[in-house]
Length: 470
Image (cartoon, rainbow, N blue to C red; front, side, top):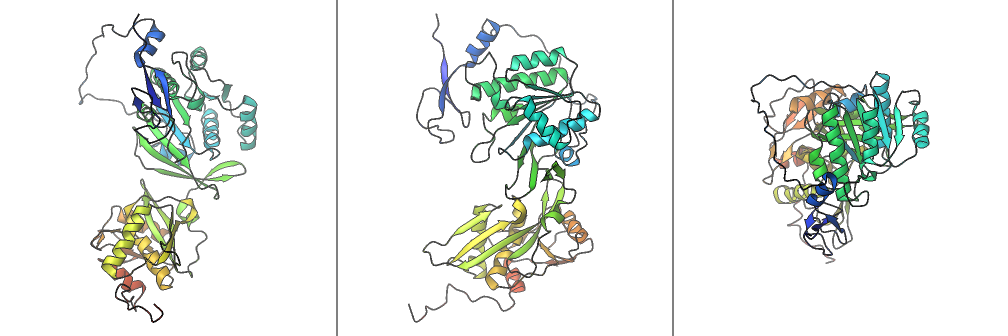
């Protein structure tokens, strides 16, 4: 009898190793390798024979053949439909992840209730809670009257048999994929093998039946979706639901979408009656501005196809430490180091003896390089002790040479700023955009921005003579 083949799989990143070792070479985690059966053994156990059968001939098609546009199922929740690309596509599989308690189950229960009220058959399967707990949440959300079919089960075979026996559903919600298990995989629930096999079975059901399957996934300590990365490649769309626990705002982002644009953003507000849509998130993020304080600049950014205005706050304070602090919330710390280096090398403004604190208001997270100019403006304002004009917005990318580069979607940014009452904008040169009612001022070099904010300028601290006390 042939020897049973096995390998060791990391439970954090899904990397496969031929032998056990203490540290995973893929992600660097310790003691996360678990021995699991090979894929060939799993298929042999499931089918009773090795997968060496002869394949069948496929019918090939051409790229220029006419096709029907994929229909959409609208949930009635505008922010959710925006992120999914205009609604859910029948036969698609969607993976949504987020921190515990952030509101994933609440969002999906409200979506399931909205679709069922619109006449669609919806099945909600929970593996983490009892049906009574879900019913209590639905009563609190006012969704208990919606005709949603509810079940509490963790066996994939039982779930698929139940779905096949009843009427064909339009939407199936699985909360969560880490709690499911299938008999074809010899591993504990939540392991890489079980998550991959369970997800594959549910995705196959979605493709054959035409139902939309939404899988809820856990996240790791660093905010990444738990389990093997192959699950993210298997599904059609990956959504992340996050937010600052100290704020009521919740952000739904589209990381991957085969049927629509990526990097879309949906904004919700957590209330006593569930998640409420935020139609104008820019006005919400700027609702508590203090225009009289130095170190605050408004950034006109883009999230997917939506222009969004957020406030960037900076605090520059003298430091008594040998290594000054650098604390960043909502932005890339490496990007902040680059802006500080350009301010020193190209503008003569040295901040190496100061603590730097930078935060994006409202719990928002910015990944755009276009925020460089707004961050630099906030830093210069805080260092000079001069408040920036409250009717200006900033956007532009800073290069290592100190030049300010143009960024895309300038017209949309300026129109959003004008709609919210901003009368001016500091932008890169030749932005090729109309102000939409806002007065546009161009800066070609970062030094121009320094002179604009602090007309008296800064003394070059690198050439400043030492004091008599030294």
